[in-house]
Length: 133
Image (cartoon, rainbow, N blue to C red):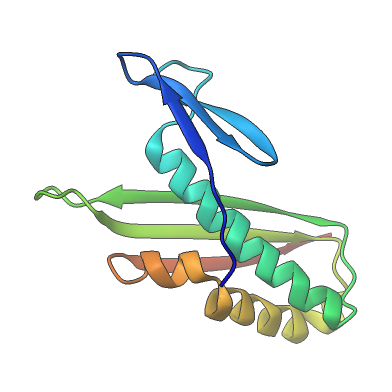
């Protein structure tokens, strides 16, 4: 099993740093800091996109890039776990004749992303796919 490790350092307030072997992110309530759900949505998006792009590359599907927006809501009752997540993937510059292959790659991204699988245990996740020239 692959092992990974991060460390976190905080002040006596909710303000600190997440340090990984590859970078650092500031965490807290200030405008230039990441909040916990921003980190969670970022992890979901990164995991999903990494899986999707790996499959698309194996299929030799060419495209210019993509954008991914993720939003969600929490339950009112405690603990306030996620209730709903909407992911919107826009694939840019893809060959429209290969749309079906892109959609299968998206399906694999959902199926094999472990973070998607984890979050889907507590929240409904919808995924919208758009193609842009």
